[in-house]
Structures are given as C-alpha cells and as structure tokens.
Amino acid sequence: KSHGFNEALFHEAVRDLHASGRIPGTIQGKNSFTPAVHLSLQAAAVGDLFKQNGVVEYAALSRMGVSDPLRYLQAEHPGGLALSSCYMAKEMAATAEGELEEACRSGSACDLRASFVAALTDDDIDAIVSASPAISATISAGRAIRLGSGLCVSGALVQECLSVVQDFAKATAAEAAQKTEPSQKAAATAKGKSGGGGGGG
Image (cartoon, rainbow, N blue to C red; front, side):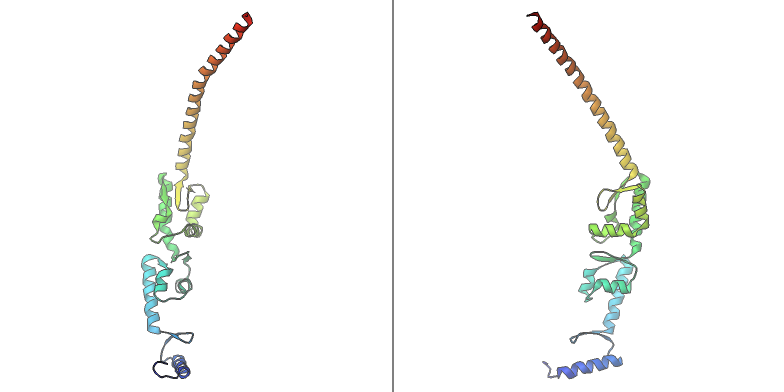
C-alpha cells in the first residue's frame, strides 16, 4: 500500500509467479514469503549443526525463523529423540552408555548428564534412558542403580557400601551392649542390697 500497489492484484501476481516456478520459495498466509535460496541455506546450516553436535536446540531454530522447530527437525532428520528443549540423534547416547559401562566395570559412579553438551532436564534423561537398550538393560539387571535423574552408581559399589554400613552398625550395637551390661549389673546389685537392708529392719 505504501508504494501505491493494488494489494489484491499484488498478492495474485505473487501467487501466479510462485505457481509457475518463476519465484521459488514458500508462501505462508498472505504476507509471508520465504525464498527457496533462504530455505536451502537454512536446511544446510541446520544439517551441519546436527551433524557436528548430534543435537540442535529448538531455540536456535526459532532464531533462524523456523516456526515449528520440532516438526522441522523430525522431517529433516527422522529417528531422533524429541527432548524438552532440543532434538538429539540417538547415536549421542553411545557416550553415556560407555560411561555407564565403565562405571560398572570399575565399581564407581557416573553422571549421565556429563555425557551431553546440551542442558538436559530430568524428563530428558528419562527419555534417553528409555531410548537406550544398553542403559535400560544395565539398570534393569541391577548392574547400575540410579540414585538421581542422571547419577548412576554401580551395583557392586552399592553392595560394598551396604556391607561396610552393616559391619559398622553391628560393631556399634555390640559396643553399646558392652557398655550397658555393667550398668545393668550394678543396678541389680544395688537393688539387691537395698532389698536386703529393708528386710533386716
């Protein structure tokens, strides 16, 4: 309107040119047109990001002008994990799987969150664990125990700690019993003497 064009004729002309392929791109509604070259560059940039990092944050795509980041990523890179704030390739779980296996082998612990560059929520970690047969099987078999959303401890370490705690508890109980026994004997002796004195009166 500011340039004196007839709006209806302008939109009709743009639609005709787009339909004929003379101006390739995407038309959304009446006022939004995205040139094909922009879409190609956008797809290439997202593809490179996903290939390099194995994960793309939805916010990054929103800043690039993608209106529905999750739907876009699922279409361009099917088979990934749709997490709360990012889209992740399933292969990225391999690092966490390796860390967990090493923790089980060495009898130590690991934090699954440390295996990923993106900031993950508790729900994200749950989704990754569920999507990884290796992690799920390790936890189900008791080789590892989840003490928190991302913190996993080897079953061997937990058993070792339980053994130490049980031994400590037994030793503490025995020590307490030894201290209590002389007191009980003294109290019984004093009671006997008191009872004997009363009978003499």
